[in-house]
Length: 135
Image (cartoon, rainbow, N blue to C red):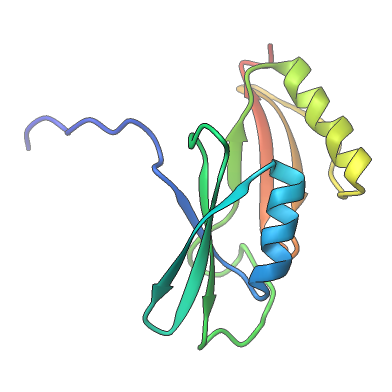
């Protein structure tokens, strides 16, 4: 079978949303992303957003065939997205930020692999901030 070629991480994340403008505002306000570019594709378009250092890129997609239903992790495809944070202090800072912005979220959950807090975007997509190792 041979050696597996190297993978360095995820290059970008693309999400189908019901209202691109609403999602652009939300991801900009909550995650601090800025519009990088517009992108056309067959049957729709996307706005690609990024952090200033381009370490995180998220495409917010509109598809003409989308009927406007909310996201459900119980259907085939994406279940949730987890964003790594450096440590427990950073996780606590995210909880404070979500509180400040009025974004509903769960409590910090301790897991064998670390700690995390969950919240949802305007289309009900579950997002997590996670500190691996719990430090």
